Length: 548
Image (tube, helix red, strand yellow):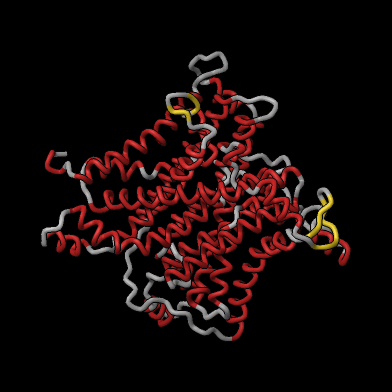
């Protein structure tokens, strides 16, 4: 790059690259180096050989692949009809349904797992009801089926938001032309709509795949012998009996390599299947009649009931009296008293860590998006590639990488709030950068050129012209980022100490200890915080929905 182009934006981009290099790339390199060191301190492939020599270890990878593949396929298959119905058919109480769909997404998946244990576990309410009323034994909620069910219900809203956003860019005249040629409703969706929004489907599917692959809490609560990679990594790195950090690092390296392969494949297929459309006549909800109307409402309401029932039951049990591990008759606020008196610091920790992380994420994301979209040169190109790395690093792998790298002077971060904030920023920054870059591409370059032609500097143009146009959309993305930070577990479970324990860690710990009332109270508080965040967003922006 020539000296003439080394302006303020060049140095900002270089600074962001340095941050990525120090806090992401260097830890990943340290992770790789640790994986190549055997128990004697020599460089070897011993850790990888150990992994492939026992089915106990590589079977966990196979199990994770089964879960992630099933969850991805089921989530996409269920979310596409849901998004199409909500956008094409007039559904009664559609506004409330939209909000409930979002609310069903905001709680951590492991809370859904805990909820389903209360509902459909061996002594669950639903299980006992069907057994006593009909003499029926319901399928076991534990193992592969239970994990897939909980994660699918959790991931459907994510795909729903992506697909809903894509449907708003589809011109309804395309469907009118198809109908004139005798194309039915089902064929319109499968033969026309799905191919048109395939890049969006692939992008949302990739996000579901990565989140399901990285999920820690759900398999730990429902696995019962069905071991997945995050649980295996945690036990090898933090096990109570023995630990093998080199072996844990080797597992992380293989997971990152696999995730990278999936990411590259998704990008390749997505680029080959891309379409550009202009919605001069966007899809508008139309009143359906007869069986079509009944089926549409039945589909939407069934999902909402399945998704919300576990959360509602957790709220209900938070007011029940408890005796040990059991809920007993009578209602009180005792669980809330215990939650706030003994582990109330986890609530303040969560809000503080999430708020600081969010501010850092928004600032870096806006600057990074502007450089990658508006600038040209080596720094912009390298930064564009580097920002993709967090997509492919599961939370458990990132947590171990940070602990291995920053656990001694001169940069000692382990056990501090800084390492928690760092992990949140790295994990969520990529998504905010991508959403901000998509918004920036919709802001006309001509407005910036006009400001510069009138004598404004590039930085002044950015702060006075570009940034005000971006902020509403950035705020929308920030709400989702805030919620995902609040509900983060897979990284936090590795990095927290007593002074930095978050609500998700506290809830997970209380469930393992059998303190179900306290866990339910904390889960309810976390749900109320996330719901309040959505309501504040609706109030400040006037929007009635969030799409991606």
